[in-house]
Length: 167
Image (cartoon, rainbow, N blue to C red; front, side, top):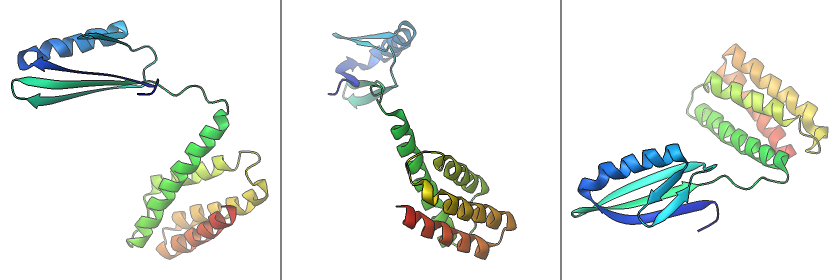
């Protein structure tokens, strides 16, 4: 298991579930879980997962604690990658709505537009194409304001063409 994760697995009798849950609550307040034969620090933890599976008169318990990744030496790279992936998901949803014959949700498009405008603030990522991309993004915003499905479809086609040029 990686250094980002800690796991404990054990069996407990059904009547001891309440004690286990109380111990988890206490551990969360103290910043340390004491589970059977294992102690897990909760300092800086990212998530905690508890799984309980019945096994006859007992429960199989699994506790997983995850910690954040180490500090990335190039945080803007991670932020940019996250932004691009989020834009990719939004774009896919926008196209799916249009393919189904309806206008995409206004909030979805607004989020995509905001991310698009943020994306073009990153240096060394193709600044040459930024003005053209911003123009088609503005066209999509105008098309959404008109509430014309045909205008939105045309604007999305221009955005898609520009995206292909950029990638």
